[in-house]
Structures are given as structure tokens and as C-alpha cells.
Image 1 (cartoon, rainbow, N blue to C red):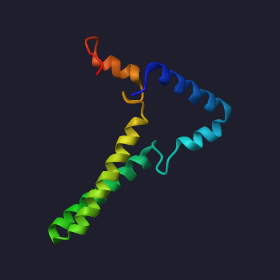
Image 2 (tube, helix red, strand yellow; image 1 turned 135 degrees about the vertical axis):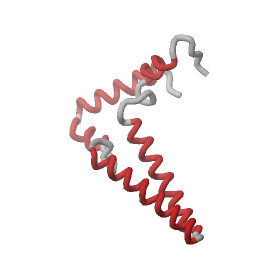
Image 3 (spheres, rainbow, N blue to C red; image 1 turned 45 degrees about the vertical axis):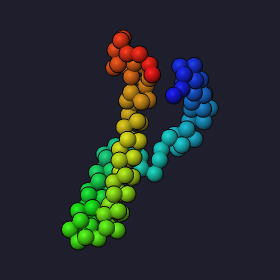
Length: 109
């Protein structure tokens, strides 16, 4: 885990980078699936449904290759869900928000 100093330095570097070349920063900020908007949510939900259907069909037909493919697709879908959650500014992105949620009696590990 990064120290407070390292987080501040990374934030400063990010801000300088965005100020220096905002178009490049915007392009680098987007992945294959944009993490914003209803299309992104729809694509992730569609991947969930497709993966679930593959697992279910594989179990019904006893095709374990299809079950494996569905399980791998579910793993990718889960990663995409976690990745999109991190982009919304939750506690993983904002350490001060995580500290506020833990309360004053929390001791670091």
C-alpha cells in the first residue's frame, strides 16, 4: 500500500500530466469499454448474462468445456465490474473516504 506522501506525489504527477496534454490524458483514461454511461453498464450486464447462460448450458449438456468458458467469462465480467467501480471514486480511489468510513478507532494493519 502507498504511503500518504506517495499518494500525494502521484496525484501531483497526474494533475501535471492532465494540464500538460489533456487530450492524451483523456484518451489514456478510457479503456476498450468506456467506464461511463449506460452502454458500458449494458455491455457488462450482457457479458454477465452470456457467461451465466454458458455455464447453465454447459451444466445441462454436461459439456465441461462450456462450463469452463462460462466461468472464465464470469471472471472477466467480475474484473470489469470491479474496475468500473474503482473509476467512480469509491473508497479504493479516495483514501480519505476510506478513513472516514472506518472511523476514529480503526488501527492500520
